[in-house]
Image (cartoon, rainbow over all chains, first blue to last red; front, side, top):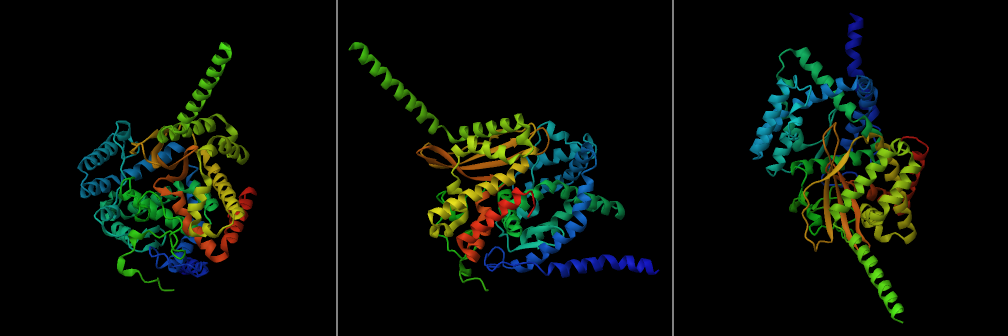
Length: 273
Length: 210
């Protein structure tokens, strides 16, 4: 009785410890000045929290996962990627791209059957390219602003728009969600998380070396990447580089890297300190 | 006399020819240049085990020989530093450019071990012949994994097209450093940024992760 009580207490306690530890997040002086990230100091704490959880739990498991034979990891990775196809198809349709939507549907059917539940990406061999779509991108395509950047616990970088897309729509378009057996559903979800983490292991070292400020490196990378995805890799030039020339000398020093298009005209007042 | 005349003529002609050939290569289409350059670099990596294992000295040499003549690192640094560049002295600018370049070479050389049967394909290129600032879109394909989008931003200079920014999977390098750099400059001036970059490079040279 006592042991089970203790066991039940350990998880919340370690989460609590992680939260307390993450309270030590260092915040630069210009934090929150970027209109894309008004809650930077809060985000940094969640970022630190994620980092603690990652180092204690997710990363070691992902490193162990790497010991699985490559064909097994390829198979699992493909199968998890196949889970994304219904969402790719629906979102392509919602974005007015019926040809891509049809292609995604074919990919899902072919890979789920001939490809043995997605284990093999047979569809790619017959020339059906994968498209990465999600409801956050669809909302963006429809003109929705990204909204403030937010760091979600465990899941990491997101924006208000992308989080809404993921929670309200994406979850339901994922076959994983519809698996009736709760244990199986959770296990698959867990292994999927580990698989995704494992794919980032190499990028980890690169980012640790290349980033002067890991938080901003990831934030700015995420925001750029999402913008690119919304336009399927061909985003129009940002508003501050209309002539193909970023204004090196004209940008105000206090607003580093600010994309003017993201600032509504009425919010021209300086960000609160 | 007749002989001298023809000699002079042929000298002049060959000079013209050479300078013509030079002008040709200098004004070669930017997309072809990027394709040839990236395939050349990829082939060099495939052929050299030391490069693949991320030997920094070898990578540095490859960058100096193959990449440097086609790249404007100073402009890349200037754009990344942003407004702080204006107040930097020539010495500071040189230091920033040198340290930033070292940082990029050091961090990205770690990724070279991933190179297997990769090759570069050009994606559709839209530009007018009169354009002096273009984006060349490529994708790197291999038998395993999804294609990787890598785009290059080039400016036409007197010495030909020069790359000054690159985009991996939708993320522009310069854009991704702006906020980090300006935060450093705001806190500790240009010298503060130089110091941070230099220290990071020292750490990386000692094989320590930050």
